[in-house]
Length: 474
Image (cartoon, rainbow, N blue to C red):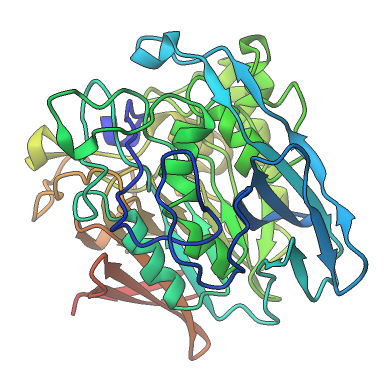
């Protein structure tokens, strides 16, 4: 199994310079240059990020990350302000990553994470005068991003100060300008795991490690316009596993309530922290997203008695039960099961994640997915891929190209072997290695999917109808 289809050892990078086009949910301080406000009122210096997350059956939760000494007040539907609940306060925690520079570097969290679970009929929402996005009556446009952080590690360093080399801020701004009704992040938000080499000016001054300064640099600051544009559905990637950025993931982005067992603070609790329960988010009366945590998925098949494989089997059974609720399901997890990653400099390929394939096959045979699953969406491979199958396998989408250092392109034509999965007959693959993002728009009883470059050029179009997808390049 390819390094690209396995838990990566990827790094992260530094905040962009003042040229980086970001905005006002993250202002002042921490060495990150302030940017002009778009939607929100100026002068909210204490608030570093504000956003709304889908949680599944619990509905929506508003989150605020602040450097203030207490949580701010939230106003719902014009009622009297009420204090938000503290999710996690400032702390200095032992680092979790072994074998990297960050293994001896404590994770310092100076910021406070606050939250409020929103009543289902909430119409307006503001925090200290900042308006937060709420779901629209009908979801007509979805923005999809994945693998967004800037890589800094022993293996590879990205020029995080250069918007051309790390274009996530530009991507977030372009995607927000499309006025989405929903944003999906397919995982791997945090990449700054090692220091920028002193010989590399392109990332000089970047924060690194697992504290909140790296979360600001990798996510909150560059993604501010997109956080302000619409509620988010977040998928957990391998960079957010407990041994890596999991402490920040649970403080800031995990949709579920925070508990000590599920915080990644104590390695003895990783059997709980590394396996989150799936949840479903409706797109309409017929279609829903099913979100599955594959953050710890390994490269080798799991035996029937393997503890990790058994945990994934239990979670998959829960995901299958969720899929029974709607006739059409889009299965979201980070590691692709039915996609390729480049190998040997792009002359060969690795097939899908063998660990997950072994678990899913025991549950569903050669199809791998429940019959109600029309499509599977993933990140992890730093490319755009859309795979159409002549066999009974879900249309597969990979969006892992939204900022982190791009993989080399897949070979064209693809080699005859290895097949992505026994019995999977690939009819067509549409792929590119450009940085960018993807949109999904309602169109004529189905959906129109467009892959965009960071410069705003359309790079691929797909017509999606039920379980079928037909793609073309401009």
